[in-house]
Length: 325
Image (cartoon, rainbow, N blue to C red; front, side, top):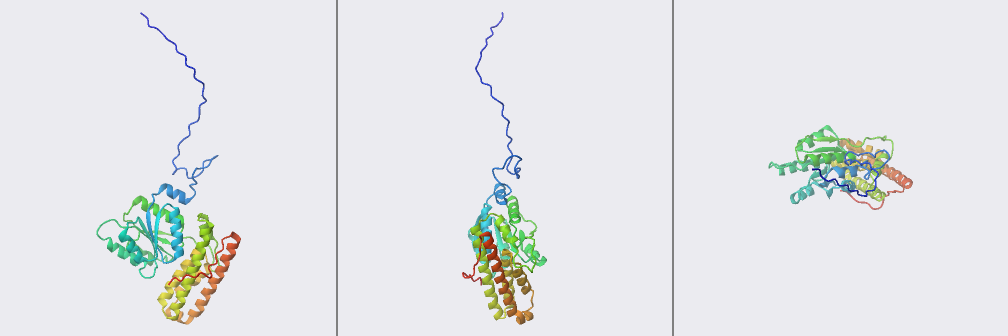
């Protein structure tokens, strides 16, 4: 016996074959493929950071408004949640009522310094629980300062002026490794390309512009830095008149940091020279030194205004003075 055979014809149209598009993970495609562009420009360090690192709650402490302002903007642009305070005591208060993934502190703050804050925080956390990672920022990049911060339990020591990509790398490490105890990481700052004979090194603010913060932010930052510089000089003059050499050096250190933020090379160098003076020499030369600092700031202000006219980002800050005791 043989079976039956049936034929069925179905009308299908011929379709041209399409090439299969490979799926490339975002963390691999850091550079545009030839003949096309990435949806996200991963050459932008902030976009790359947000794509790879979870959002963290970060507490920032610095006694100068300009420093807090730029750190807050930078960290928010990187996708983190930021709370800013202006001193070490406020850090301890904030940590008592909320948990933070990372704390960023300036080493030299009046009252409770960054180093003293570290020591008190480690006493508070001595019960064996996880330690809050603390990043210390300072222009005082000496072996002694680094050693003292390491002994106090700092997670990283970052030199000022801060390089944004290096700060983001440290935060990425903390997000990955959590609150494990690790040797202190010493992160270098921006290389100094300007000569101390120059009034302004434009590369410092050019780097800030390259981060895409916007012209309005840059103008505000310049004005606030100049206000901070005025405040440092006012406090320094008061300390000089009262023979308070240690306070003079503290304000000189702060002024050096503010000047470095703006690329005012000559003012930063003069501030550094004042920091190294002994008490006897300072008592003889303080009027001359103060006049030199005021002149350097005046020349720096003029150079910044000239840069602003060329770029449309003027920063005068000559009347709205903010004292930074």
